[in-house]
Amino acid sequence: MAQMPKDCIDMINNVYAAAVATCSADGIPNVACCSMKQAWDAETVMISDQYMNKTLANLKENPKMAISVWDETHGYQVKGTVVYENEGPNYEAIAAQVHAILSSMGYDYYSKGVCWIHVDEVYSLTPGPEAGTRIV
Image (cartoon, rainbow, N blue to C red; front, side, top):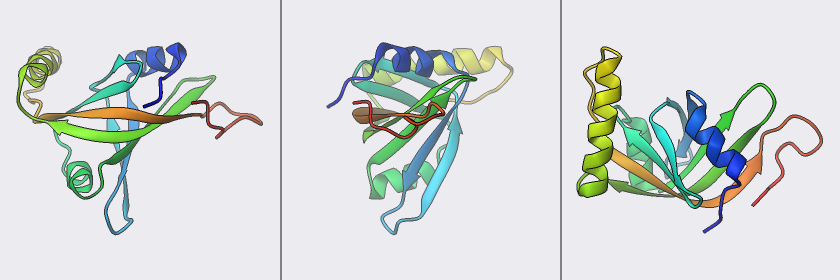
């Protein structure tokens, strides 16, 4: 596994939304928007599944995922392998946290599961000559 730079971790934890990409076994891509995400540690990103239909179907066929985050000046793409969890103490804690956050916003959604992305690679999304280069 690779380790994300601190700035990448901070960006994942602080930008409102991220683009999450998966691909079916047949090579059909899918990109979804995700706001319930967190860099769990330097090697792992957590994404909560409230309504991932195509994303989850793709992960069952192909457990690879990319997540992209950015702001006005720079960004990162993190690629890795996903383990999906829908039971156990980590899932229960995250599900309770997600429900509390969404309830406070007036939504009655629950976490159906958690995608644990084990980081394999990190790329720069910063505009300029280094855009697209592998950082880690």
